[in-house]
Image 1 (cartoon, rainbow, N blue to C red):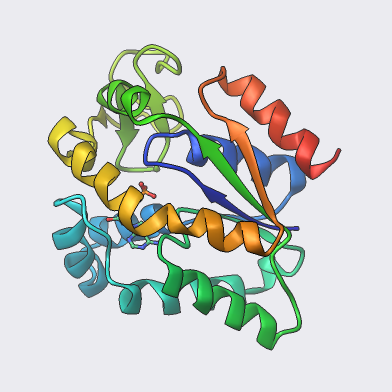
Image 2: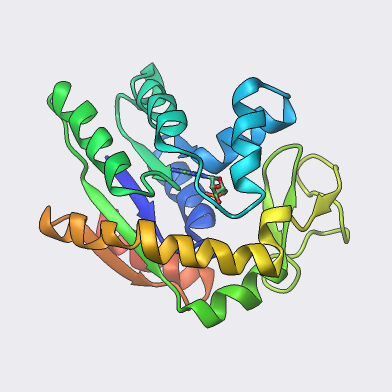
Length: 214
Ligand code: AMP
């Protein structure tokens, strides 16, 4: 099953993608996580990506596409994958389609987790992330067991620079300009499915599993 998740930053697509990956035993591929791991490890890619991420801008397609194309051709992706945060532009979507076509495959579902902008800004200010293992929390809806400490690895959880209100506003503008056109792109391919992302997390996941089947 090859799935891509679409939605504004903070719509909850990452949380849902992780659950989908667990339920259907397919890898969860998050380009944001890949960039953050590169930043943490001080790689050249990380250094370049950080300049864009800190400003709420997209990392250029030429730094993003090859990375994903290599990843989806690895062995663990033979039964599918759930892509979270990619594609984010029409050229990225075209690159993905072309790469899959070359190996005689195509996407099965594009799931749009729909949340209005006004809900997003509130949500993001409460989001906390562990920069060591990538786990994400929310001070109200998904709190850590011990305040400020990651449940999974015990490191500190923080408000990511790109989750700060001024950057979130920029990311939303970028989302509407560059990523939202993908909704029409996938509508034309008849694989677009929309879920109401304002519902509680469990209800969103239930709606997604109804789309994907048991
Ligand atoms: P995310 O964790 O998916 O919200 O991504 C965090 C940041 O990483 C984004 O705001 C972008 O700067 C960058 N990023 C992640 N995925 C992509 C992508 N597919 N294309 C360009 N930039 C990306």
